[in-house]
Amino acid sequence: MLRERVAALVAQASDGELTAAEVLAADCSLTALGLTSLGYIRLIDAIEEAFGFDIEFDGSLDTLDGLVEHLSRFAGRPS
Image 1: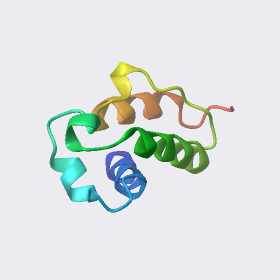
Image 2: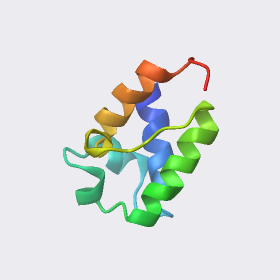
Image 3: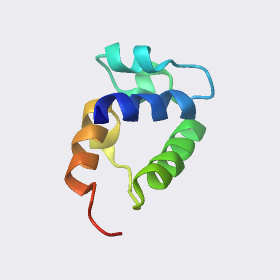
């Protein structure tokens, strides 16, 4: 469920360049998939709004699974 939710946020942040299904099926970084730096800014905003806490992106958060793992550790914690 969380993986699908994050994939939908990535698709939304890509401004129509990616679909959630493409993000879910990809076996590469979000950058390699085509998410731009502006898309990452949008994604950070969307994640922070959806989950209610601030995140900082680093290299491990450049994949869907990296994002999901990171969010699953921090979801539910107060910001």
